[in-house]
Image 1 (tube, rainbow, N blue to C red):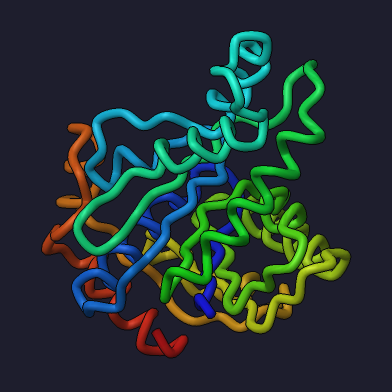
Image 2: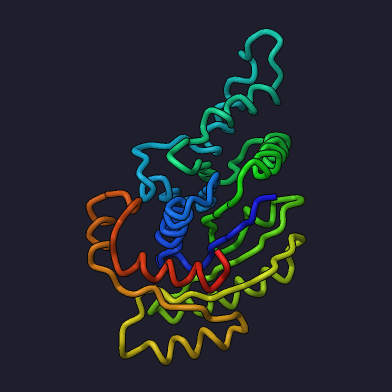
Length: 249
């Protein structure tokens, strides 16, 4: 059974960057096969992992609704959707990427969403690790019908509002039907004069504080230029190695 790491937090805290670096760490440690799931509607994970363009589950869902009357003879809605889902999984060296895209629109998505959930859950046992980039509301985790989460990492930064979001995420986890075995809190690029205050606030959330990912000019420049974080040699990567060793990765 795959071991699942989910990353959540306020927008702009560096969730997607953290997920990218975790995936790269697992690839370097030859811990594959790995499935990276981009469940954030902004859908930026593929860019940071080196993909030029990705097709999303949301786009496929819209396509199925439009093409329903023109399916090839003998093909059901379920088989058409499953074939499309297999096609949109992006393959790379050591990992695959599944991008969810936007949530439901005004159309009738109930049946299609059930197909997506079943496909996702049938898919994950084929991997050793599943790493999920979530929105703060944990919608993707909440919709998983049978898969639990081994590790939830909540990211905060210099913005005090990110601490409030971390508290909200912690409360949301208590209402989820899926079990979360471990919850950790990670600070990202905290300024020197604020580290003690932010870390204290972070620890008051009740989640176990593990580390701070240091500021990294190389990483920031790479992201600014639209580059991939795969194989990047930087201080942030050293922080990820420390983080993964602490949580048993």
